[in-house]
Image (cartoon, rainbow, N blue to C red; front, side, top):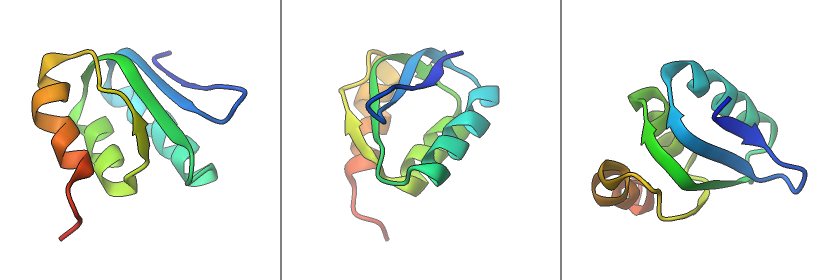
Length: 82
């Protein structure tokens, strides 16, 4: 599984996060809304995973490993909500 909940409460995104991982991420974010998300080893994330990150706006430990995530998605997670 590419979404893991570590002992210190951090949610880790690793490698390729697929659509199936979105549900696990959402459950972790709902149960621990102030959790830090570490995506430094995330190379790709399905749009469902990205939508959850943008919706919950957790503190992200990064930048992510993947170029697409780092260049295009990371700035969206830091933008002010409309």
